[in-house]
Length: 316
Image (cartoon, rainbow, N blue to C red):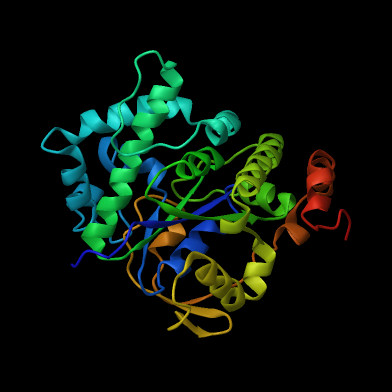
């Protein structure tokens, strides 16, 4: 495959889990010049140390894309050593660190790290440089200049915004907290269920951190509600493509609510990433009918301020 010209572009999709980010990433990965990479933040664990299936059906190390990327990233060493080092550095790139990451300043590919810098800063710089290298290799190996990263974590998005040589677009996906918490109560292959209160509180802090990332990059970011995406997928996918500089045509949509999905190379994510072919886009609104009234009231109370801020009704 030929190398795409220019520096890598990244569309980073952030938000709470169970908000439709996997589907959105799959749709965007079908646009010309885009590569749907899945949840890149998990490449070290799920791609190298404890491999899970790539979207193509192979393990990442055997995948024609990820196998080449990981081999070149490791530079002749055991990839597990790199993965272990990166996981250690990720201790300093967590949700609670989002603010610090937004303030830390630019990270260049090659300048030296001062010995007197705090350990946290040095770890973030080292992790960021490996991430720059990873994005660049994905562009070289696939020949596609735009990488779709559905990792969701605002802290990773904050770090991404500090990387020199990367053009970043941030898409913050928000879903009604009651739909999110109800979805977390249902069993899904490969994904642990989450207790209602924990899911509701995570929804609040994750979306507020994502808001902070968008505030830092107002001209390169947007907020999108899951419900709006499900009702008008063509309109909103086109809007993201234009914001990120992707050609909006040809479109991957067969009609207003059906998308053509090819085999992908997503390294991690919701099991829905294995879906291919003509795929109907349907809103999951089962919480309206199936969520117990007591739990609905609990989640509404915990998230009311933010529900209103994102335009959701508290009743009805």
